[in-house]
Image 1: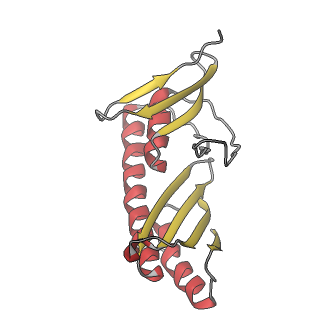
Image 2: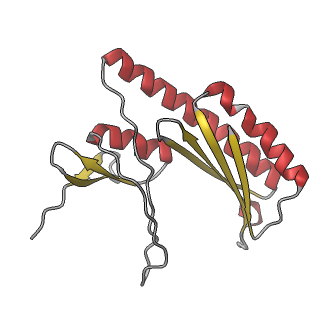
Length: 180
């Protein structure tokens, strides 16, 4: 597993990188298909001192699947611990869903990475990503694994790009755009 450690508004020392490598290496025991782990450490100036250090961990697996987790804490090492623990829980949930699908005899496909755009009064970020064909149920699963509120995917049943999203009532919605 390749590990990339990046810093934003923070200097990554050898000690911090060694600590992160040690903690993240444990994840490979839970999920041997991890090809790359990317840890982004950041510091934000917020009013809440216990939310200033941010650790975001993204795991890339061989069939093109992504898992992502983010945690905030006052201490950088504690934020790393929290994000690794959160990722362990996500891996367990992911493995449970895969086993459930295998038992049900469903075919497994490789979901795509999701891109995010930040909205405001103007476009401030553009992100490109590959879209993989999948069912709406698989798109919901990938959305949950990434911890997002929406997910864009190619639906082969409708031969179009679709969006699934989490509704406030806890259910999911499916958007199927049509040209006017």
